[in-house]
Amino acid sequence: MKTIFTAILKGNLELKPGGVAGQAVDVVKSAVEIYQKTINDFLPTPTKCHYTFNLRDLSKVIQGMLMCKNEDIENKSDLAFLYINETFRVFRDRLIDEKDRERFNLMAHEIMENHLKLDWELAVFQNTLFGDFETNEKKYIKLSSTQELIPRLEDLLNMYNNGDNQTMNLVFFEDCI
Image 1 (spheres, helix red, strand yellow):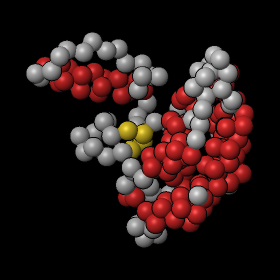
Image 2 (cartoon, rainbow, N blue to C red):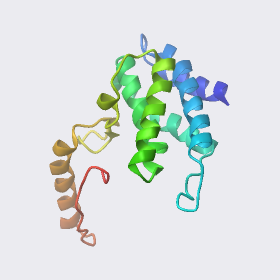
Image 3 (spheres, rainbow, N blue to C red):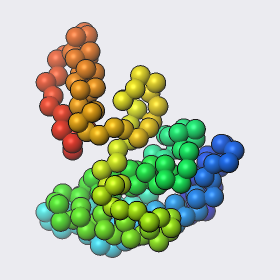
């Protein structure tokens, strides 16, 4: 399975000459280790019955990374931000309490540091978000801070509500975004 994921990610990253395709192997090794540790450490219980993870989740991490265009991945740091976003989106977002999320953050941080050879602070990366709704270009890019995004999302909601659609009354907050 690692070979397939590596080939897909590396092939996509090689589309940009001089890119970060060499990091694909390390990213996939890290993703597989995070997946294995997650299924061993975050077991389902009666209150956490949705803590079931399978290989489809691992493939969602790679699939999410493929949504970003190669020209938007300039260096190893950009790739790390993208990878962390997708890993947290697929695995951490399903964890229901702060204790489990913090435990996952520390575990993922250690594994990523070992495989990606990055010297980085967890706080810098843990709230990274990617999406395609910040600009009108519909590019999957690293998003601005939550406080900068909320006015953009409110404008999009107003455009939607002013159309022929049923009105949605939404309040945007960090977990929602």
